[in-house]
Image: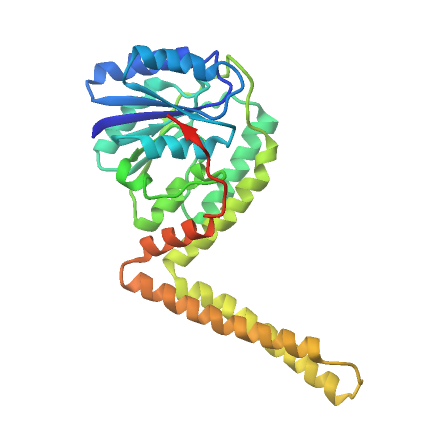
Length: 320
């Protein structure tokens, strides 16, 4: 096992690849750590893969993973994490907006005993309307919903202990929620300010179109975190709502029957029955969750549920 793995997803970054590699090597080589660099080509349509492969042929510490088509930043990052062999994993963007000069500070924080170190862009060099303002709102919302107030969830420059991040399944836009997911297991999280540079080459791949994906993932994370901290209370609350709805529907059916209005009450009675059955089911689910929590197998149970839920998703095909 190596000391350090540096992971950078790439998508149409042919102009950045060589400069990114040189910047990482210039910073990491003096640290005298047994390290590797993983570039994940997320189905680029330009010469990104060819340039990265040329660099890898000259430096065996560089490994290149290639997707057959574009799957997105999170699957690319997940592929890098899966293939990484380091004890410490550092992720960063491939567009040179993250500064490799900050890498030693992340390593120092991990060595202090933290499990995850998140960078926050102190002087962010992005457009105000399309990038900064949505990011501020999203970070505030994520902190309120998950209970893990990270200042800059969207900053890809982060460091992880391998045993922590490899246990977290990633999909959709979930890379920004890794600290919230890790909080289930009680991981220690730190934040440090990092430098941020304006993009010099290529075009930004991000925009307002990702907002709905982030909101859906946020809903999923809220469900998981709530389940993880107090399963019986969470399921019990929903069960009460279902039971209340069942009673209201049944009472309305009785009123209609007493008035002898003559129309069929099958739909009302069926709805009341289904809501009642749902209430009972949710109570049983809460009991199982509480059992998993009390016996100490909560983390394994939650991760198994997530994997089972998303086994139907198309998995990226990749080449190494």
